[in-house]
Image 1 (cartoon, rainbow, N blue to C red):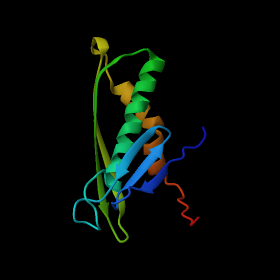
Image 2 (image 1 turned 120 degrees about the vertical axis):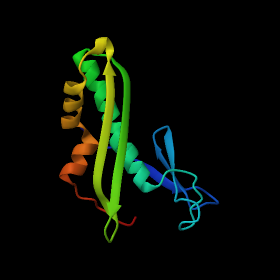
Image 3 (image 1 turned 90 degrees about the vertical axis):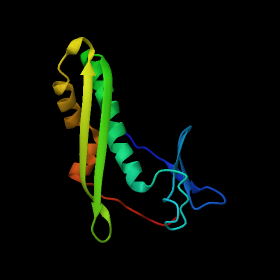
Length: 134
């Protein structure tokens, strides 16, 4: 399937970081007053939740295209719990509301997306994370 590469750099004059992937960017920061954060962007937990939900939404749209159905409305809410020392994500819950054209049942589409979603499956199955200095 290939790889994805992103690059983060500190935003000058702040302790926030700007992440880039091609022409797209996102700002990562801490909440105001926490470890120098000023709330310019999402914290890491929010970025993780956005990745889980965004991947699922993309999968839903791709499967809808493959199966010839039209999604009229799609809403995905992701909640992640954190705990432990060191802190880590302990639970992820996602609630999906979907309506299809013609009143078709969205459950088969949701179940298929649940089975193939890349980020969700990566978290469920775990993966090694290598961190090295340049």
